[in-house]
Image 1: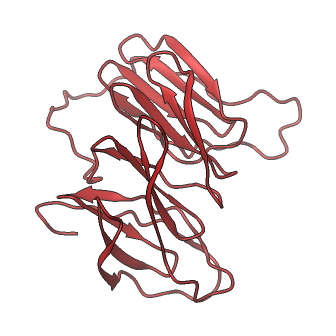
Image 2 (image 1 turned 90 degrees about the vertical axis):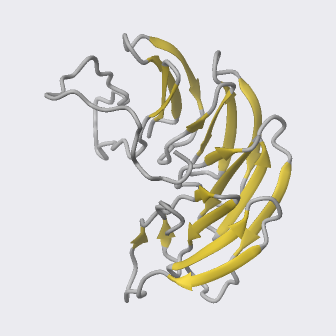
Length: 220
């Protein structure tokens, strides 16, 4: 969900069993750099959507696993897509952010960010929000792709570590962890910073910030 709680209201029946599976890997005679699939699937209604390191977005029937459509991004994709009844949105390593028709996979619009997008977007109130590796959060109108606002952190470092943190939403507020491990609360409508806190101690050397905020019962 938008708050990244990783919970669902429906229960699970144990033991779990595999209903279907699909291989998203790209065949290569010489597999020098084995591809990993860092993207996680997202479910909306009776459809499952997932991006792939091979640069494609897939739509599957949730019950049967039947491929409904696939659309090529052309660039490797690490982030998980976001979906609603009409649209599926996904970013890529080249900074290309695309919105696809959820029913057909045809492109509705595209937006070119200034740097790669390895975090997962989130959809709320007819807008889509995503974080890019230049320490920037961008809000786009879901139907048209028009920019609503963007928020960026001051550039204190000439080089920042790669960040996979994704935004979380709660109560008209967006929460994002930036490359210097600062957690920022942003007003969802205006893009204005409401407050910021150091979320973790910055470690020496290079590395990744993978922490995505989790919001539950008004606590982050």
